[in-house]
Length: 337
Image (cartoon, rainbow, N blue to C red; front, side, top):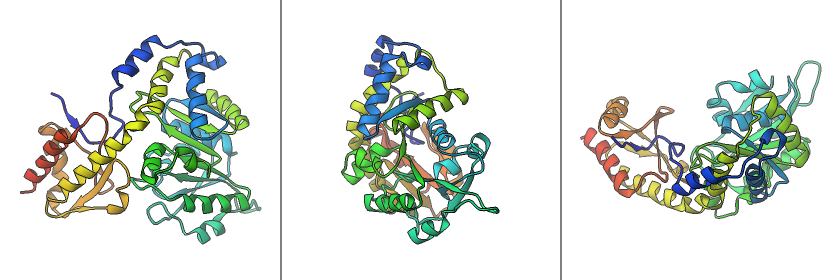
């Protein structure tokens, strides 16, 4: 049985072009930086994001945690949004791997009170830690945060001589929503993590980019974390296609999400969060106590969904089309009739 999968844009299968490229990829031992295809991917992502160098990481969580591990020393502090991926979806890795303290700053759906941010940056004293890093995210839970806001965050960081790391897992989606090149977002961060398997359809991987000396250090830290890989050009071949080609089709996912939203709006008691509707996701809640049974009902009828933070998040991606979206949303409608 083929499921219609609305849980995430991480569920996509690699394209036939990717599979062919993976089979034919030139490879070498990446621990020695001898893999030509991987070297090409890392250089491509760095150039695309306007940075000096990049290093391939198996996952987005690994990439973010490697950034913290490289930027910070044990006992230092990282300021991060209260609902950031680093806090909510990385299994408590930061204090375990880097020994850092996370200071979670409350935001208005990704937008901090900048006066409060400015005041929360700490200098080392006998009784307090030192703020070493600010972590931002774009897209943020379906919302593309504006560039002028990022510029202000970066200015505050620079004033305090603090670095900025951007979790740009879906930075290509954010750039599309903002109608800018990805480097226009990335320029307000010292380092950026971009995911190749969220929306871009590569089977595995993220790339961490930044200054060359930072990436050199990160490559050493990656080995400490168990991320030294061998003939990994097989994965890099798919990643190159993800960046060069699949990033150019994201507008289809955004259009399909808008179509999904329009169908959901026809169902009584569904409340869509319009502020989170910038990319390929639809966040919504249902004012009906039966909503907690919806996931099982959909699964039994061939659709995979996921309850998300007391509501729902439906995601458009390469492997679903408008016909399948209509089938899925009609099931939601039927369930609540």
